Length: 296
Image 1 (cartoon, rainbow, N blue to C red):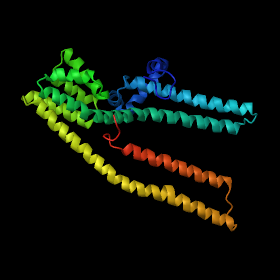
Image 2: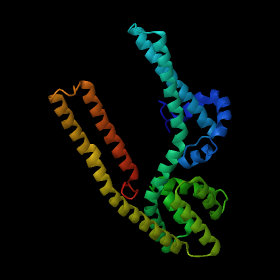
Image 3: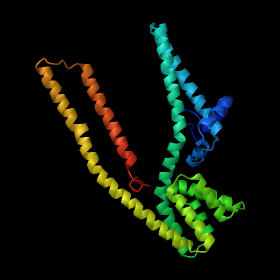
Image 4: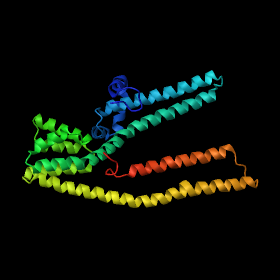
């Protein structure tokens, strides 16, 4: 796995950042949920190791930005004390932003991984239900899903199969799965299967019921998203089409009658506004797309 924002692997970054562990041992108390989020995100590092890499990356970006800007200023023979201080602050801002990015990344990746699980879970549960209903033992059905191509669902089931093979009971392995996943539906599946195994209920019937609930919930989200799109379409028309058009026409009229001089800076600001609005708008829409519509 590649280290975030760094041109080398996570293992190499861990070795290079080991020198900063004395700092991360102090900072780890500020991030009590970090170890849990790393597990849920599928990042195989301890909280201390991850924070060490975050500190290493932050310092690397700080020095890279600062030294590069100083070198450019020296080359152009425009370096002053005032400019050097500005570059120092700019480097600090970039370094701090890098650390904040690292701090937020595990929880973001954990949520994205949960979304990927819920997208694949429908297909995995359908296969599992068919197999168990056909008389295949529950553990063999687990092995089949683990060896199939269901993304993070298969990855988590591989861990369950490995733990059961090493001596844990199926209930204990599934309970561990609940602790290390962010997916609400996968937690529900694990708890319901544990309950069925303990009470002797049919696991196949339990999975079939959960599958129906999951499909119904995802269909509800799709319908709700379709209704939201109507509102988003109106917002886009107002702020992405109508206001920019009226603004340009208004500025052209003011410029025509000499009331306001339209400069290249004014046009640049309009272009920046339009591009920024497009990026923010479509990023927001993309983040709201239900997992069922995101494709496999």
